[in-house]
Length: 237
Image 1 (cartoon, rainbow, N blue to C red):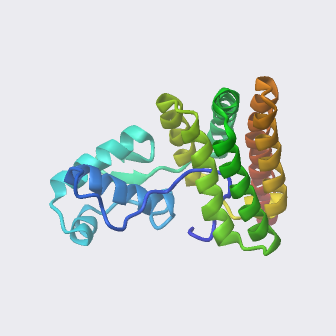
Image 2 (cartoon, one colour):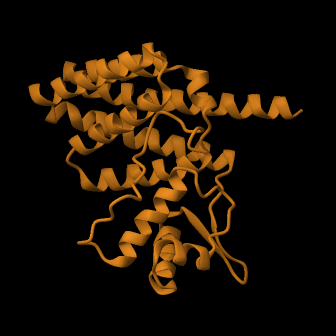
């Protein structure tokens, strides 16, 4: 699934170089989250405790605790007498997640109009210019990574820790039902035009305009997702 990702959100955590200042359980949680969000562990796949404990070089205790934490995040499901499985997100649930995420992202745009300054705008435009180069080159992989960083920057720039946590929760769940077709359906250039609309709205100082631009960006991503699902269903028929 590493080649089957959408381009519009989330920041998958890295499995590399775990932070030794964190507890073993938290380190393990982050490594498992990385495997799930990058698609190495697929939706519906069972998490094999023995294999994972050997892979991470840890006992099953911290591993089980980390699975409990991922269950609380909605990334895995625990089935009695069967085990722990990567959660599969249905199309209907994905639609609901997009709707709520659009509202939260719209709020982020509104908040940013009060916090914007020359430094923030300069960094946003730097992102846009770099993304444009990658879009013109049709460089999906680098565009994807930089796009994640751009969205993460916008969310963090709100300074609202509650909003950041909630937004990332929606994004992580949506990673479970992504497809590369989202990119093909919308196009890199289209995605970046939407980004420019968002930044222009923030710069205008108009809260309602910014809120609408951010909301609309997610709504369009939702439409691309639905179109991809429908096309996939038609091909199967």
